[in-house]
Length: 109
Image (cartoon, rainbow, N blue to C red; front, top):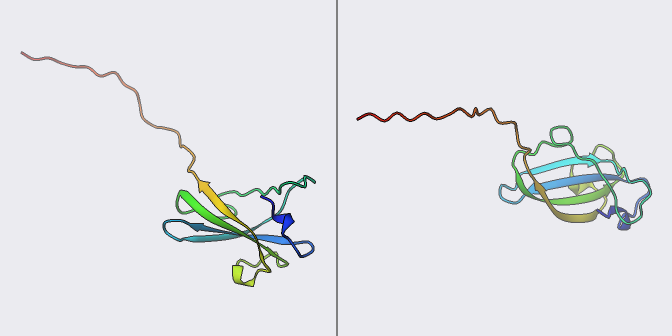
């Protein structure tokens, strides 16, 4: 992501909006830019279940807005769109509780 290229306010907070492509379910959160001085891209950490709760797996359109407020979750009140794109949310595989047991065949005549 390269949000700082289009950021026009000092000390911005970034509002992330995720819109599911099929259900149009919308999730929003404010994330901190944790980049370490690399001018080409910006880095953010997003934890599902902590920052947002993705209800569905699949593809989301994301919009990132600049804003002064650290608590605003409404894109209408943000101070400008700085990036848009597409994200793919995949559910992590859970451990399998299936047992592999031998199959015995009985033949009756």
